[in-house]
Image (cartoon, rainbow, N blue to C red; front, side, top):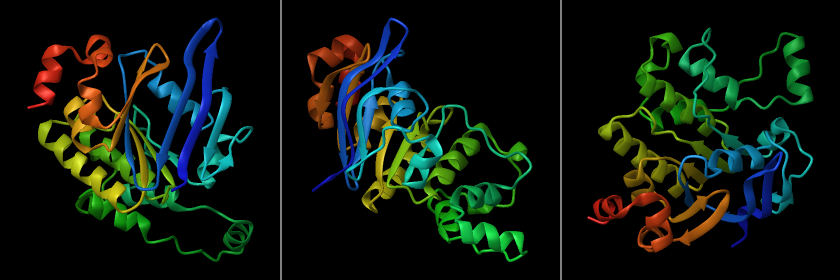
Length: 253
């Protein structure tokens, strides 16, 4: 099976500091891959690199196509979607309209039609994304009316509405309570099982270890462990660098 995402020797340097160094990651169709590590390990920088927001060396491929030189919007058109730690929504649009904007990929003909006053219908994925994350009841709400947890989920739904080949989620569970985090985990697992390859960053170790197929651990920008959750959670380098004995014991219960 060919990888949806494949990075080779991916490195990001800020001045004399290596934020990410020679990182090789691959994610196959329908896999849910967790990317974890201490604060400052390079997790968000890695996503920034593959989505085109920071300069890097090495190679990034999406479905076998090299992305070097492509701007973020060009990568998005190929199916590379992401969320951000701080969820920024269009405050003058409803929840549904926020998703509609994300779902549209205007072509020359679509733009020409709109100039002539002929609206091109959007795909049905916004409604599907709302239903999947149980947000359809607030579809007509304005962002100012939402809780922080709801804003986070709308950010995830907006990325899903793009029908991405690769979905990159940067701490989607931040600000969620235990029940909300568990619900999110089930939804993310459903998304992956339906075929959307997903790369997940989160500090909720219970969430990551419970739902991911594979885990990659970064420390100081380098991969120190990779493999199935049961293998990674017992890796002594991971215990020393990140989890700590108590956290590992709790995660394995």
